[in-house]
Image 1 (cartoon, rainbow, N blue to C red):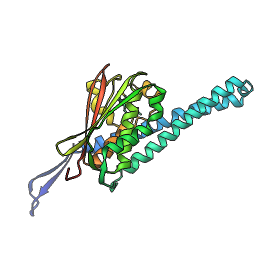
Image 2: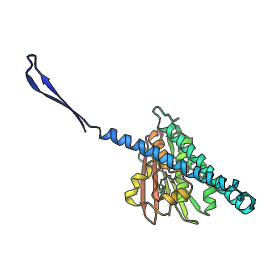
Image 3: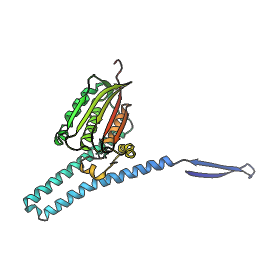
Length: 260
Ligand code: ADP
């Protein structure tokens, strides 16, 4: 709280009272703190792969390149770290674009069933790598008001997370249904789950429940922040249910196109 006080003096120089202005700056302070945290997080996330690439390349230049096995394994690490940098920069640019005022999506009647089918195709590689099974239930055609490419982005993020935070050979279910005025897409995994207290925080930029585990899994920590903005841009809703050690269900609701 910022407080300013000033005396009010009458025409003949006598004291009439005091004007006090109180300005609640809690929100401003919080915003400033969020901005500072964000800059600190970005710097940290960028510095980690850069330090690694620099260290390994220096060691190679100093002579380690002469051993072929070392050369290959260091190059492999440097390649993976540069991939991480590229993904991070892409997600940062994406987030800043989405968060900018005036960001618009092209909302037209779009099939949620088709969106799920395209998303599965795009998430094929991690699914196959972990030998996971995907079960889709979408018996009725659900047409929502949405931007197909943006909704695919949302679905791919959720499917990749469901795969990332599950053990190999598990199953992920995707259901497409209607509920009141909304088309619903549900991604259900049998993975590690999220503690109740952590659930609201997973949509924060760079928030990870288990920092080391999430970083090693290759994510940028920005996926769900991007998902949240995109769903809000569709006037939709996100509901997360999770049980630690049992799995997570993320339900996305997008307004239905009329006449269904
Ligand atoms: P990341 O790139 O780290 O996956 P996200 O923004 O996509 O970042 O998710 C934020 C955090 O939420 C993750 O680091 C993870 O701790 C948690 N999380 C997201 N999806 C799931 C899930 N399906 N099961 C368990 N934890 C999850």
